[in-house]
Image (cartoon, rainbow, N blue to C red):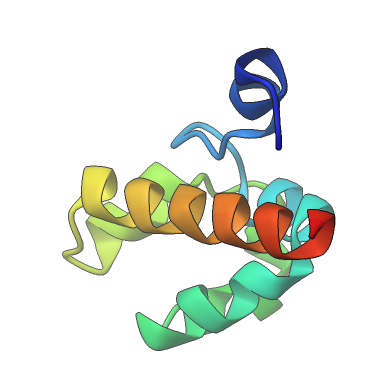
Length: 81
């Protein structure tokens, strides 16, 4: 089980760029795809934050970040068992 400190360190934050999130957690591409974030494959993905992308797509930033973090936690638990 991940310790609280590790969980905080590994959290997705709205200030992260798409590339930062995907380099750390490539499996998050399925969630970005679910919301039609095709921009994760464009050159701007290294500069656009998750917050900026969510706003452009009309998606709640808080909802998206929460879903991304749930996936990170779920994936981590699955790989520790």
